[in-house]
Image (tube, rainbow, N blue to C red; front, side, top):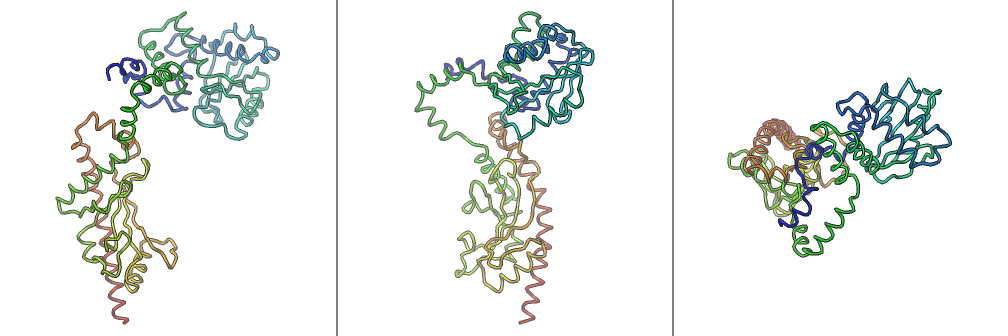
Length: 401
């Protein structure tokens, strides 16, 4: 294990600020950092050097540009009045220098595909609003993909890395900014570009430890499996407090089920003639959803339609008071309510495996338990109204008979 860590150490640095803040795979964050590097007045003290180097790269990598522009004039100009606009007219980066009458539009794509007519729209805006300017359109992608519009000149994030490393070597940076730029370069190599050296090292490690690694991959914990366990533990905690009844034998990874005593009084077990929707003769179940990180933690009440026809009619009428969705006459399932364990959000789920490696499991379970306990107050109030309506309609049905 130490041997593997040594080989991968430069890619596993957990102090990289871009990875700590989860910025390295986010297109808009890259544009923000590029805007910082391009600005002549920022703390890097490079003035317009990054912009000039970018200009030079665009020209060198796209030879057909040379006939349209005066290369030497452009790269030797002073651009210290350069203004950087983020998301102006939805253009990722719009760079404007009034003194030299130059405008550059940069479309930055990481992971997302170029949408139809997007570049045409941006180009049309620039051409109409900067008519007497030298106009340069740049399409920035991880692997220097060609744009659908030939007027947009492709460059890659490898070009960005080359520019940064060259400028750092020639002009240097103060210590803090130097660390920041190095972190940015490493984040690009790890999360944006295909690092050939990393690929070779990983291939070699896998070939040497294939059996062990395959076993690890097969049994590695995934976030939703862990969340399912944590929800179940929280439900058991509240069962001990008498607030609900856990149903572990009828729960799954994606649906954690429970009941309450008050609901069971009104919706008791079904007779042997009606197995219910779960094969356990239950008429209903509370369900904590756990199908994906975004919806995990939502709570609904599910009712089965596989019940006595007379009770089904009363139930259907009751549920219609709480849910105005049109249902088919032969409905099998009816879900109502829309609650959420507020402590749980997408970020909570996506980071749960990491948190469990760093924190006490009981602390995390208690967080979920406390949040679910608070939500049960609202759920029980809702169920009081549901129960009252069902009893009222049941009595009316008996009287009409």
